[in-house]
Amino acid sequence: MKSSLFSFFLIFTLACSPKTETQDSPPKRSGNPIFEGWYADPEGVVFGDEYWIYPTYSARYEDQLHFDAFSSKDLVTWEKHERILDTAAIKWARQAMWAPAAIEKDGKYFLFFSANDIQTPERPGYDPNNDINHFGGIGIAVAYNPDGPFQDYLGEPLLSDFYHGAQPIDQFVFKDVDGTHYFFYGGWGHCNLGKLNADFTGFEPWEDGELFHEITPEGYVEGPFMFLRNNIYYLMWSEGGWTNESYKVAYAMADKPKGPFERIGTILEKDSIATGAGHNSAIQKPGSDDWYMVYHRRPIPNEDRDHRVTCIDVMEFNEDGTIKPIQMTFEGVAANPID
Image (cartoon, rainbow, N blue to C red; front, side):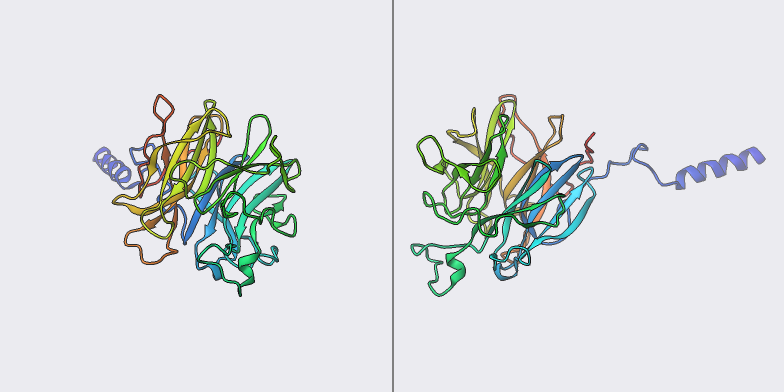
């Protein structure tokens, strides 16, 4: 009798005990969106043993006045770092702070960003009575930690002039294997490429004396991003309109960071899960061939221009190096800590 009671209680206890991931329960995943709130234009980067995402705070231009950042040890659990930079530190920025891009150099963390949405007289949005239209562009802030506090590095924009028709927005800094820091940027359908100088205070001219060369691929609108895999340079960009469902991501491949870049195809676009998917970046787990697409998308139904959320999904490659179309999910990705 005692043996029967013991067996009953043992079976009952095992049945009622919570399962662990080793007991056939599915692994914990990040979910999409990966954190709460309206955030867009996310740049993913690895600093040390942590994944970091620096997004735009998605709001009306007059309210878009600060940046938050998010960090994770495993891609699943994300910690929010509030107001790592705002207009209290960047006195010349008065509206429309967006598209942050972060990189570490010599023990410092540099955060590049766009501000003020500057216009030219040739553009419909230009207002001669609005001095914000006349001053702004791409700024740079610096800190000793990836979560800040960041301070204005130059006290003025790093780049405020228009070259080759490109609005000075949506910058990305790519460090090549030889240590060169390439500077990709541009809106209004033009993509420019420059080289940052050693202390990030300006640009080194090309051999022909120009500061920037236009490298615009077919279909380009904005949001350039580059990464290197197996000696192939991948340039990604966004096409369509950022306020609607036509937004999407295309890419090209080249054997050097200067191109030329021939459009290969679209790898991220609207589907039954979400629309307006774009302005992406990519994260590689160090020491592996594990890659992830970080991007924003518009939930269905989309109820507001600025209702954009940050998501992450697996990015995979074909044998020839081309990128497979990204499958948007609600589940996100499984944990993948950096060793």
